Length: 428
View 1 (cartoon, one colour):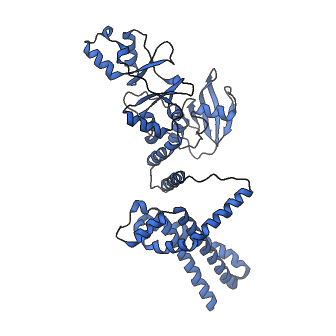
View 2: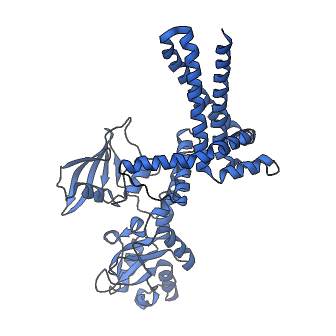
View 3: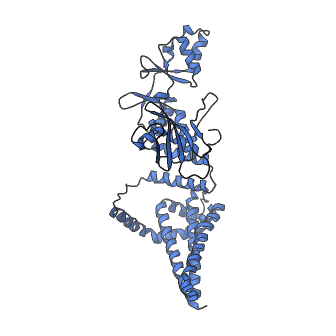
């Protein structure tokens, strides 16, 4: 082996060692906020400065790592060509594939998973040097990318720092879930919290067709019987037409009034027990509605459209369920509307919300244009389908099984690429 070949192999080893340090360092520093390096260590301040510009950190490490890999590949090609001739290109490809897999993918993640804090401190100075060296280059790279996109006809929107942070956090949680570090329920909970920023009241409200409301003009005996038969503690009162909501009746107030008159229903004035209804617009962002619930110390609001027509109702529980999943108690009526079939398909009620279906089966149907499964089919088909019609979109096949007039009541949904029959989580 000649001296140039030895020098080349030493440089190859150095390049792969650098890629290992950079890969491990980037992963460990990204987790530094959670692992919290010791504040008295001067390298901790260095890590904080790196985390203040994560995009610059990521791009600088990416550039340096790729330069090291390309350099190692070129040097190794020179050595292998002198040893094996033209077939050396095959050996270089195999050798670099193994080296990149080990030093860029497997070993860094393994080391960081055991001691992220220590790895972050050990690699902080090296990573900082790389960022200082290649950081000034990253704006030029971004500019070149934007120019290429512009030539291709794309006009990227201005970046939203908050959205980027949310997407980075979501991506990190998804990665940890795939690696087995985060269970599905925790991933869904954090995902629901992040999705809250993108939702409006209309996305989670109970539509007026499914509202349980009481006619205020009914006899007190019937009102009491209807209230006791309902699985809810707060019920809208209407007069004249169901859209004319005049109050909200709380079961606790009704029971207190019954106790005060010795159980004589005829002595109760239902109108005097009703609370003033609170109307909110359907377009209100969900975080704003959550804060309004907390500020007013109430759990119930009626939703109206731009014309003031009642569209449904929303409760504090509806918002919390977007974060933690379905909240059921001993008085809830357990009707999921999702029934997995042995062949891998799923029979779904048309009124099932898309978000609930995605959460239950870990699917990814879009919910930007429609709230329910039936609404998604109508939106995509651009018509009201007939029974038996089948549509395919977003990687799923939808077959209409039943409908009531213009309303789709039951569908069969089949994933086009599935490895095992769909199954519901326990308790769904």
